[in-house]
Length: 545
Image (cartoon, rainbow, N blue to C red):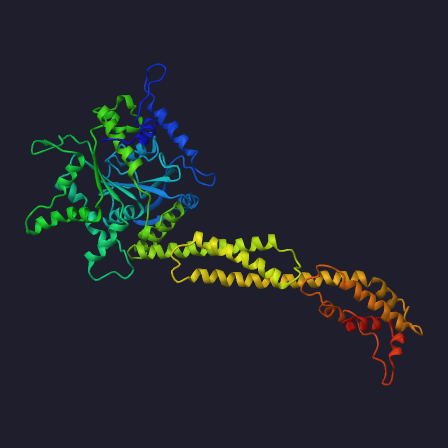
């Protein structure tokens, strides 16, 4: 297998490359650890770095649940994700192969007994070794066909979830691809019953199943402990040719033959992009096979190491980012939403539906986009507006600029808002916020103008309260001082939209109590100077233009 030049450096640092140290000894594992540590620097500060796997989908008493702690980790990953899932019969070394991809001896648990070690679906997130702006997510699934399970349907759901969540699906089996191996892969024949592409599927199931190809993962068959020669009719063949030959349909219309052909047909139909890797036994030492995590690389078969390196190199180079229909890129937080949506559908007795999952994803992200955009509008308005503004138009100009920015923020973080439902929600939200800013602007104007008028009329108010104008001729003095206050008030800058004296004072009039009844009929204007001072103050406040 050829390896592109860009991969050589990565492979050199991979867990499958050995460099001699100063003493001439292999230090492959140390190199792998350095490789993973160096890759970790590619994560943004906000992203999560996992030192060990965590259960993503728990399987307890045949009930599937999504682990909230795993969701918290995924929610912090905003990068596109390359998701590699491995599925296979229990006790066939799936977890060990995933640990090799992670560049670790330990991680996914390796069992040494006949009991299945992994339960549910376990997840390990790490920086992608060769794609700086991507996150690699490894999914290790519990073994299929465990005799301790009571309900075989449980295996079918684990298989379906691995297909739905991954962008690269690895099927792990032992020895050879024969009739028995294909029979054990019968889960693939149930996919049309376990997964729906659309919420209202076509009556023609085959036509509906054709939708799957657009979002199903690439398929890799890993054959472990392979002891055969790669030859066909006496001629050497590649691993891929070996797989394609095994998937050839057996001619004939016998029902048994047709049943045998079903897994072949489904693999060929659902997974047009296929790859095969065969692996020799890593060692002939049974004790090491029981404890593979303790097996030093120098004790492994060289061919197995080379095959493992080819497998990992291919995954790192060719495994694609997870996408949904119409090219929707899946990030870590989106993957968490998909997992919850699919598991909820299973637990409710339904079938995971991609269209419904995308709708749920769109609703969640578009709601968050509305909130993000509305927050941006509020923050920018608060930063740019200085209350009170001289005119309402000045405020509206800032509003329109902030609204345009908010809509741009929404468009950046939303998707599939086909009927502009969420964009309309944003516009409505911004309109309400604008009205609130208008009220704040008016309140600020009134408050400022009241404070300025109070300052300018302090002498006049004091004179009224002291009865200075309650003398013959005092009314003329009062009018002169009142006019001066009004002129000074007009010169005050930046009074805002409520700068008219009548607007400013109408609240103040009622603050002055009526301490006596109005003058009797026939009293002339000079009587103003003989009234109580508080009544005179009320008159002043209510008569300003």
